[in-house]
Structures are given as structure tokens and as C-alpha cells.
Image (cartoon, rainbow, N blue to C red; front, side, top):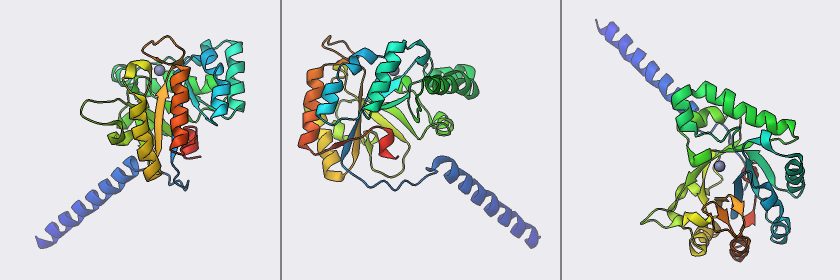
Length: 262
Ligand SMILES: [Zn+2]
């Protein structure tokens, strides 16, 4: 009888150990990157405002800013837009993926499953960009809609994934831990939306820059169109320049999203 219990006990230990190994393998970062920590900021622009981004080449160059452009619907890019993106890439900017059709990953997977999402939204976005001569290695979730299960699958295709964080009442932006990267090999990093409609002020951004500077972390910001329309998903060139000046004040290096680990 005793031997039977001992066997049962040993079996339980083995099962628990296997579960633990499986758990850590599934949820922990598979890679350890040796990139030294530096105070930095990542700025990216989403969707397809190519001409407006291109128009700010001189502004980016003036402040040594290397931005990341997350492209959605790559099949609908005109040849002029492709040329502009190539010029931006030659300037040191990163061209990355924002999905084939800009679908909400959470809604889509709930309705059609994860496999369909990969086949219809992820693989076509990567292949289309590759066909145009780009090599997307990072991804931004449209609407910031993600989950651990989707992250786990997408990390087979991309080095880094970007989710979203918003300014919330009762919290200052330097308290939003997920928008800061601590050079710890984490592969899902949130961005702070800084468009006109985000309610994020220059003071907020400076507060976040201060944390990045003091703790040698990288902060991730993102916007969409660049113009003076004051539209919800736009940022003015003047505001961008103020942000770049603030980054200089706090001695933050500008890096592309992939530059955080590659
Ligand atoms: Zn988008």
C-alpha cells in the first residue's frame, strides 16, 4: 500500500515539474538580448500616411530621429509611396508591419480562430511588404488589441510586438510601466499614443523622458498622421519638434523599434 502512495506522490511531482517547465517555456522570453541599457526613445507612426511622413524627412534628420513606420494594407501602396518608404528606410527608419487589413486581433481570433488570423492577416502582411523589398521584423497591433495567446503565436514571426497604453486618470505617464523597456528581453512593449486626440501633453512626455533618462530605459511613443489638422489621429510638426527637443534635453537616443533588441 505504502509503495502505491509513494508512486502516486512521485507521479504528482513529475507532472507538476513538467507543467512548470512547460509554463516557463511558454511564457518566458525565449531569448536573452545583450543590448546594453541606454536612455532612449522610440517613436513610430501607424497606418499609411506615407506622404506626410516623407514630408518630415528633414525634421527627423535634424534631430537624428530614427522612426518606425508600421504599415497596414501594404497591397494598396502606390509605387510613389513605396519609393518614399524606401527613401525613409535609407534614412535609417524602420518599415514594419501593422497587418494586412488592419483587423482587430482579439475580435478576429474570437470569430475565426488564431490560425485564420495568422493565415489571413499576418502572413500576407509580411509577404506583401517583402515583395515590395522590405523586411518587416516587428509588428504593431491595430487598436492595441492583443492577448498572451496571440502574442505567443506572433512572436514566431516577429522579434517585437507593440501593444497600446493610454493616459489614464489618476496616473502619470511615467507610471505606465508597459511603455518603458528595461532591456530585459521582454518582447511585447506598449506604446503611448501621443496624437492630438490622446490628451497627452508635452509635460506628460517630458515626465516620461525624465524616467527614461534616470533609469536608462527606453520609452515607446506613437502617432499616426503628421499635419496641422488637429484631427484625433494626427500630430503637428511643431509638436513633434518640441518632443524631439525635449528628448535632446534629457539626452535620449532615438532608436527604431527593432533597434531596442537588434
Ligand atoms: Zn492602425
